[in-house]
Length: 225
Image (cartoon, rainbow, N blue to C red; front, side):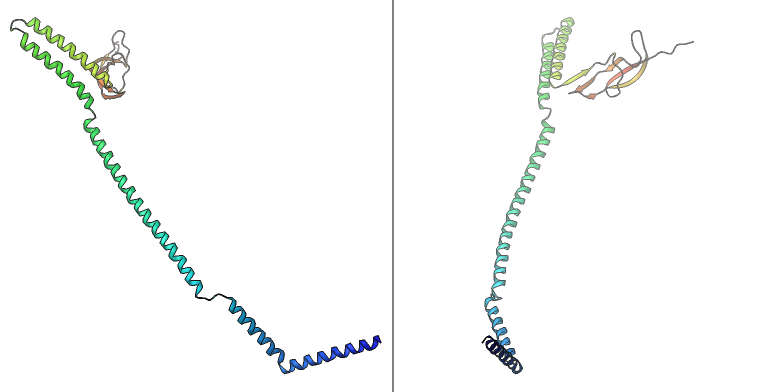
């Protein structure tokens, strides 16, 4: 029984193989495969989006980006113009302040000097009004008192504004503060290389020398043999 069933199955397989070979010899499988390929291609084409949709979205995105960039450029341009205007205003203001400082920098000093001029004027008026032609002693006393008052006022004005008088007698010679006029032999108690005599006083303004003191410097005297 089993042998019969096995024989029958073998016959069926052979029949199927022979029929398949006959179909291939007639070209039926080729037509079938071509149809399948065409159907698959049409299905793929139907699933792909149309080509016209892509460029339109890209153009829209570029337009939006261009609008944003244009707004940013306008904003930066306005900021740049404001910054340039502010810098120009600051430059003009600074220049005006510098010019005012040059002109009115000594305003306080001049105001104090006016008081010195007032003292000198009052002293002169007092001498001319009260003095008698024959009383020279009284006139000289008034002049002396006026000069003392004037000198005291000048010293206070100088000290107030940082103006210092140089008195370098006995100091070592310094070319940054002293102007050498001549050399003199060193006397008793005077060391060579120091200032022996001041011909004209020097002045410093806040520690900076504004006028050199004209001095004579002592040098060691040469001994005669």
